[in-house]
Image 1: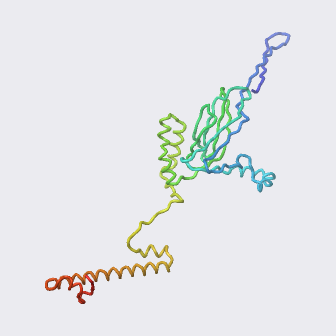
Image 2 (image 1 turned 90 degrees about the horizontal axis):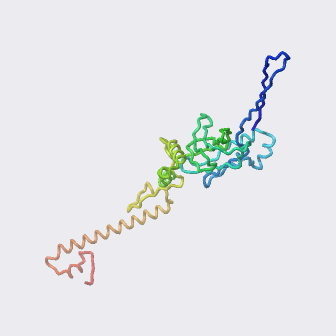
Image 3 (image 1 turned 90 degrees about the vertical axis):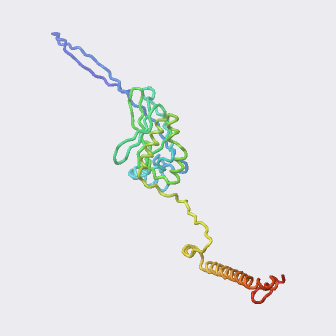
Length: 286
């Protein structure tokens, strides 16, 4: 708490020239200070350690001699997916110089170019799980005491990419929006709706591991096979298919020939004689 003294004097109209003096001390309330905020990115993502003061060895010499390097390194974003992935943020060790209690924490994101802000969460809770909309954002926290003395704290630069179609479909199956509504979690619900709105009218990318399959056919499709098969293997398949085709034609011709013989001779000769007849192209010991 900062003390300011204000002194005022006023002549009382006495003939001896004496004046009365009054002094008033104003105590200015100070905002909480001294703490830190950390960001835990979604599972599988890498946190921007440089934004938190960790500099790679190859950059340390330059950073020591060039203050602009620190600024550039600190601006590297922490990446993740919009809507479908969660960040965990926690602020600790903030103290009020006047020993007042912490009044509230307000977490918000700010667009680095447009400058508008979106409130993510506010209240007594100093940590939480967050879902961010699509784009580049600055994550901030405003901390205040019970007398509304406040201070803005920059936490991290967050950038989100578009989820794939498969990731979005998986997110829909989780039913996060109905769950937040049912639990009465207004901050969570607001974050989800804002993030979902940011993806409206945007074509989501396909999954990189998504594969298409071709159904099996009983016939040979040259337009498909010639693009994917070795030429020698292709010739072998074509020769085998041609052999089977000719064999099938021979069998059909033989059956038709026997049928004609039977139809021609059954009226005058017994079946055994017919099947043994050379004219039927079929010999049998029947």
